[in-house]
Structure formats: C-alpha cells, structure tokens
Amino acid sequence: MGSNFRRYFQFALVVLAAGAIFPIVYLRTNYQETILTVFDMTLPQLNIIYSVLGIVFMIGYFPSGLLSDKFSAKKLLWISLLGTALGGFWFAQIPSYQHVVFIFIIWGTFSVFTFWSAHMKLVKMMAKPEEEGRFFGILDGGRGVVEAVLASVAVVIFAGILGASTAIDDMRSALIAVIYMYSFVLLACAVLVFLFVEEDSGGKNTKQVDQPEAAQKEKFKLADLSLLFKNKLVFVMGGIIFMGYSVFWTVYYFGGFMETNLSVDAITVGQITVIVLWMRPIGGTIGGILADKIGKTKSLGGSLIGAAICLVLISILPVYTYRTVFFALIIICGLFLYAIRGTYWSLLGDLRMGNKVMGVTIGFVSVLGYTPDILLPLINSGLFATFGDHGGYNAYFIMSAIFGVIGVMLVILFGRMTRKNCAQTGI
Image 1 (tube, one colour):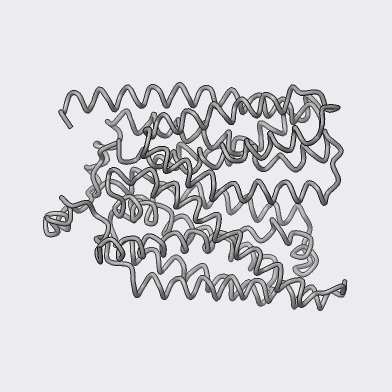
Image 2: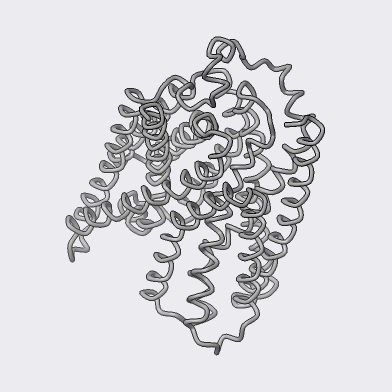
C-alpha cells in the first residue's frame, strides 16, 4: 500500500509538472493582444517567435530521447522546470524583442529537449503493464486540469489588476503578475520533483524492482539504435500518432468555424470552446480507462472513428441546421479528440523496447508523430486559398476525417502485429 501510494504520488507530481511547464510558453492563447501591446511588437513578429519555437521543438524531440536514456529522468525534469521558470522571470522584465526570441529558444529547449522524453519515460516506468492505458490517459487529462486551473487563476489575477482600465501601464502590471504566477508555480514544481520523485525507479514493474542492479547497468549505447530502427512497430506507432495528432488539430479550428460558417457571436464561441477544453480531462481519462478495460487498439480505433464521424457531420450539415446540433457535435468531437490524444502513447508498452532505449524511442516516435505541427499550417493555407473562408473549414474537417480513417487502419495493423509478436514469443 505504501509503495503504491508513493508511486501514485510521484505520478501526480509528473502530471503537475507536465501541466505547468507549457502554459507560460503559450500565453498568447489568452493574452495575445496584451503581449503585443506591452512588448511593443507586431503580430508577424510574434508569429516569427512561435515559428522559431516550433523549429526548436522539432530539433529537440529525438535528442531528448537520447538524453533521457543517458541521464536520470528525475534530474532532467527538475532542471527543465527550473530552466523554464528562470526564463519566465526574465520574460517578466519585459525585455527587448531580440531577447524575447532567445527566451523562447530557452523555453523550447527546456520544455522538449530536456523534458519531453524524460517525463514520458518516467510515466512508462511508473505504470504496470495493465495500467499503461489509464496512466497515459490520466497524464493528458490531468495535464488539462492543471492547465485549466492555472489559466483560471491567471484570469482572476489579470482581471483583478487591470479592472476596467485600458492604460498600457496597467496592462503591463497585469501581464507581469500573470507571468510571475506561472514562473513561481514552475519553481515550486521543480522543488517538489527534486524532493519527492525517485531516481528512475519507483514505478518500475515487479521484475524491474526485483533486479535494480541489473536495471542500472542497462546503459544506452549508440549501437542500440539498431533495436529502434529494426522494430517495425515503432514506425507504425509513429504513423498512428501522426494521424491521431492530425485529427486532434481540428480542435484549434472549431472557434473559427463557428464564427465564420455559423455566424456565432464571440461570447458564445468562447463558452463552447471552454466546454471543449474541459473535455480534455474527461476524454483523456475515459479513453485511458477503456484502453485498459477493452484494449488499447479498440479504445483508440473507436475514438478515431467517433471523431471522424463528427467531423464529417460538422462539414456536410447545412448551416441552417439548429446551432445546438453543431454545438453538440463539436463538444462530442472534442471528447473523442482528447480520448485519442490521451490513448495513443499507451501503445509504448507494446513496442517491447526496454527501458534503456525507451527514451530514444519516445523521441523518435515524437519526430514522426508531431510533424503535423509543421505540415498542417501549410496544407490549411492551401485549402483556405482554394475553397475560401467557409469552404476551407469544411475541406479541412473532411481531410482530417480521412486521416482518422487511415489512423484506424494503422491501429488495426498495429494490433495484428503485436498479436503476432506475442504468439511468436509466447508472451
């Protein structure tokens, strides 16, 4: 009981860390206009900053795996949280544009290169084989709860300082207070991880716990990369995440679709998108639990099909249909989208890669799976240029539904390959 409590407590800290490290990087989500005013920059300049951030992310994914296999995941976590916090304290000084670009490079480095694979690897090691679905589902769902709670606190702080004022000095004070809040939370998380998370051990399964010395001797070597590239399941899983993440991306376009295609007012759009945001903890947790109950591939495949059906209906229903029908479809689709995101990483255990190459495996799969971050903006620009503002959304949702169907095919293939491997090895 004590061992389980310690394991769950450490898992909770990893979830807290994952939920706390990214919001400060994406402050533009809620404070874009304020950031532009306070930092005296243009929207194209801000977009350039986030393009730089995306490049740092993509460069960092694969080596983040190498790093987490070479060094303690616990150390990488608290260093990442501390580094991101220090970047936040610098950001709160409202530095020049050039320095802001450098701060985002720092944030990109600490939130992906040193953090991403390390925190995923820790969760994988903490979860027993029969718990992997719910652990990864709760990781994404719990991260959503942390982000939503922190965002709510930030709004209270921001509104409390700014009030009805439109003065730049008041906007500056309110934004600085929000940045400091996020930075101090990161600092507190770094301390908690440093004090209470064990050195890559507490969550290993029974066999690993019984053989700690053997586990410690399993150090990653470059020659071990052959284990990664020879495993066909790694590439199939990368394809599944690519398709699943591509479908998930539609969540960022629901607001624009409602305003442009349905002529919904901004306040209602905000209310619906907030409800969709709260589907993250619900969808991620339910998807993870179902993955353990009925099987990972069944849960993931069902979520992909559900999202694809919703997207097709949203795109083909006439706009004079009752808006509540669209609202319901968007919310239900959000539930499926977050179930997808909360489930696809639970497939890691089926790769049977071993802990010494687990980090580099996560990094490599992330490179394959998250390339939609680069590709989709380019594809969508073409779709909207071809079909117009209204038709662009419909074309994009249909394309995403097709990605979902391809994802289901890959999930079925993955399931067959894992069953075949189990039959051959007798495990």
